[in-house]
Amino acid sequence: MRVMIFGAGYSGKAIGRLLAEGGHHVAGTTRSADKQAALAGCGITPFLFDGAGLNADLRAELAGVTHLVQSIAPGREGDPLIRIFAAEDLRSVMPKLEWIAYLSTVGVYGDHGGGWVDEDATLKPVSQRSVERVEAERAWQELAGRHGLPLAILRLSGIYGPGRNTFVNLNNGTARRLVKKDQVFNRIRVEDIAAATAFLAADNRPGIYNVTDSEPCPPQDVVTEAARLMGVAPPPEQDFDSAELSPMARSFYGENKRVSNARLRALGFAFRYPDYRKSLAALWAGGRWNKDPAGAF
Image 1 (cartoon, rainbow, N blue to C red):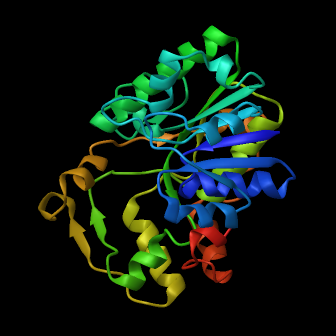
Image 2 (cartoon, rainbow, N blue to C red):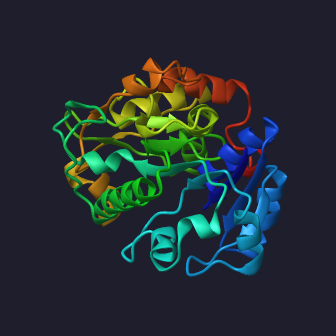
């Protein structure tokens, strides 16, 4: 495979590293020249992309790409690649393209009152950012369908892993145990995102898949478990209704659901970190919890 990852951030670097370790040629984009070295350190050939247009170097690389991973959030102006390919033909830019992955979010399901949802559930996004994701998913489905390309949509839950986790929050004093009655969240280790992407890419498999752990739980339980592993006292519980939160932080609690990963598991994919307890224990025991994400996977 020759892979291009648009938006090689936290998840993109993990995907790129895993694929590069598997012997595939991987390139990725960043907006900042300062971040190019971090991509190179993950085995990813770095390219600059400003979200507005494709420069000559990037076009030359795209001419040989077989697998495209889009990890850039759309924003109010929509998906940047969709805008580009509305103006010029996708096949003319990537004539060898065989498969597309779009990294989305379980936020597209909105609030289901704590009930279980799967990939066939009704989409009723609550936040503006989730509305934008639904629009981007549909745009990619239309674009892929027009060109007869298999498209995998990966709906991700709350992402964490080395350098970005509850241990870090406890260590720097920002961890909170907010309690909202019956509230649950799913989460996903970044390494499992990478593994799921590689698994689907290996067979150019299309479809919509929830990439999430198997045990949605109250968020305060994760903080309590991480504190136990660290051997420190957990922060006191706070009532959600009276807590001081930014509008964005509060908006996350407006969506309550349990997200099933059964479809992906039915294909034979095995999550390395299916629940937060196993994941946190491995992260703590391995001593990688506070490592630089660019070199931690």
